[in-house]
Structure formats: C-alpha cells, structure tokens
Length: 164
Picture: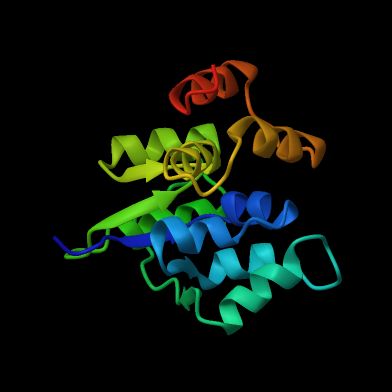
C-alpha cells in the first residue's frame, strides 16, 4: 500500500522547529506537504524562532508547498491554515494523513473522516521507533517553549510511549 500524502497544519511544524526536532517529521513520515496558506502562517517574515528550520526544509524539498485551490467546504470554525489543510485532505483520490493540533481542527477532521495525528502523537511514535530516547524530555522542551497541551494528554502519551 502506498504511503499517504502527509499534510500538516502550522502548529506541528512550529512546535517541532522550536525544539530543533523538525527532522522527526522526515524520519517518521517522509516528505510533508503544506498549503501556501500554512506556509504564510509559519514564515511570517522576520526572525521568529523556528522559521529558519522550516524555510530550510522547504528549500530542501522535505516540505512541499501546494496551492490552496479547493474553496469548499468553507469550515468557518477553523483558522485559514487549518481549513486549507483539511480541504486539501478531502480532495478526491488522495489518501492523506493530517498533522493538526488544535482541538476544533481535530474534531472537524474526525467529522470529515480524515486520518489525523498531532505533535503529541508524533512524539509517541518517535519514541516507539527509537528516534528519541525520551518522550518526556521532548514534552519538557515543548512546554518550556510555551507549547500548550493538556496535562492529561501528556500523561496518556507517556503511558503509550512506555514512560508512564
């Protein structure tokens, strides 16, 4: 079975780039695809932390940028990056995995029948595949960079990673 296209919203890219672990995406999933709307969210100009790593990944073609050419469904409850990612994911004939962190975005993905995971799930997978020695350490680094995630979700993830 062919690998699915992996579409990412901004949050997982930003979170992993802030702790210099954007490499985990490539190691776990191969090439990532983002819409031009998500690109504009993650590369806002200036020198925000993580932007250089994301720009380098785009230049190295580890992150591919596609046009947001699907106007429907509107998905008004989501920000434009999340909406463009989910619209691309429901494009006919393309099997996708969507990387998305925000609760509302994940709920809409579920409603649309889109397979999805987020930063927390990626960290669990990285630990299970021995790409990181400690999921707990990665979560500590993310929390130190103001990544917001429920404590219960981290507890569950640590248990799944064998660190509970």
